[in-house]
Amino acid sequence: MEELRSEGYRPLFVYDEAIGNAFGDLVSDKEGVCALGVMAELATSVYGKEGRDLVGHMRGLYERYGEFVSDNGYYFCYDKSATARIFDRMRNGGTYVTHVAGYEVTSIRDLREPAYDSSTPDKRPILLTSKSSPMITTGFKNGCTMQFRGSGTEPKFKYYIEMRGKVGVDGESVSRDLADMCDAVLEELLWPEKNGLVRP
Image 1 (cartoon, rainbow, N blue to C red):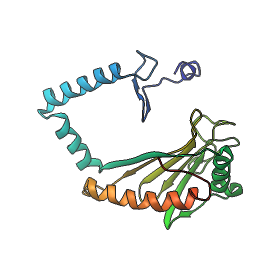
Image 2 (cartoon, rainbow, N blue to C red; image 1 turned 180 degrees about the vertical axis):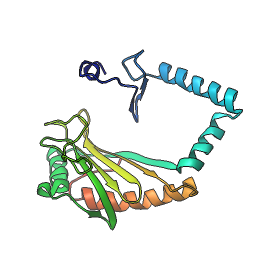
Image 3 (cartoon, helix red, strand yellow; image 1 turned 90 degrees about the vertical axis):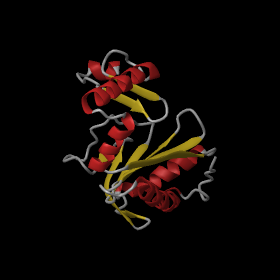
């Protein structure tokens, strides 16, 4: 966060799906104590001003914006060249996919230099890019977003997949749709068996 501040940014919220959250500029790290404080503040506000509990507040958000579900995971990947092969195949020489397993792709963001982002006017990512840490994010017409990266510390190929359901569609239905999509897309994009990827 200090690096971002030195570049003129003011980080308001930083998170890692597995480790924690950082709020505001009081503590420059992801940790649970600040997250607990912000959650308590939210609970007090919701209960005091709206007369609801956090579960009721969350239901209200789902009714307004739709259910959000995720499927984050990884494969063990003991062959480092497999990660490079997967990303090279996804890049397809700069001609990124338009459909995967029958699902229409609406955006691609590739953060490895020379980098690419189909959603920006100049096709350059707004996010930081890297020469050594490949990460590709694929957006789909049905509201699903899939992010892929190799682990820098473990023999793993990781994926982070989330979907926003349509307003009025229950969470179980959105979860089923996402599960079906995950199986098909992971198989088509990653070729797990051919690349020696192993489920935990």
